[in-house]
Length: 91
Image (cartoon, rainbow, N blue to C red; front, side):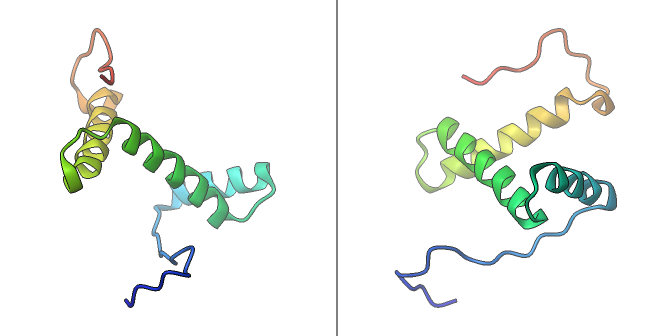
């Protein structure tokens, strides 16, 4: 895709499982906005969090921060089978 300095946003196609989509629709209804706006708000917030906690590792820092957040969520979930006395904390 050609890079244009005047473009302020890029289209992205996302896929969700039925239950996730139903959750997004419920949020959309509660907020009074389209589902795409809900998805944007959630993703933008998470990316900002990843940037905030990204280690100083250059281009891969954001990817590592995102992977750590996802891993923490998986380990801390009841389905993981990993007993936790204290949740992992961000440094």
